Image (cartoon, one colour):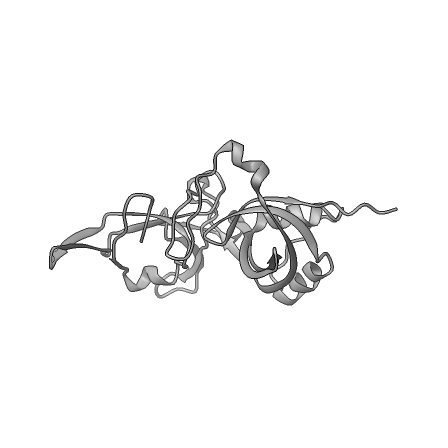
Amino acid sequence: MKDQSAKVNCAIWESMVDTLEVGQCIKLSNCRVKLFQDEKKLSTTSSSECEVFIDDIVLNELSSDDEDIQRDEPAAMPDMASGNIYGIMEMDPYISCPKTSCYNKKMVTLREKDIKLYFMFCNSCQSRYKTNSCNNYLRAVLLMNSNGNEKKITAFLPHIKKMYESRGIEFVFSFDRKELMSSMMNILPIEVKYSLVNNTVKNLICKRLHNE
């Protein structure tokens, strides 16, 4: 794990591993710090909590071993990079937590012991909900050409909707991955100006398609 000031090795509990992805901005609480060979190490426990930040408002620019990302000052907006989104690697529709502070955290399906009653559970707020009380959300891994460089970027629902709006089309959510990919391919390619945080779209401006 790394932020602007330091980095630390962190051991993650098995139940938490499946909820995390490389490049995510997270907040860990109720962790344990150990000193081993004069080096501090962090480990989660059964009571640890992990909050994943996805919303643009809370994502911070974090440097990685591969790329240093500049602080997003307002004056930097005109310097957004240009690119062309031309393909799709993955479409991942999912049910997310309705609690605002969880920033659309992906939920898991659990069942009550001894009875066939299923519910959605959020690892961030440790709350359970009925499916119809949750949000439908979407993550997409897209292919982009930027200045001759090919890269994979991750975009979430708000920016995917922007891409559809640039084509004058209303986005229709579905849990059918093939249907989503087919629909998305129909609006590509799209010329964009963008900024990223660890290969996740932070700001996106799409060139509008004007029909004659």
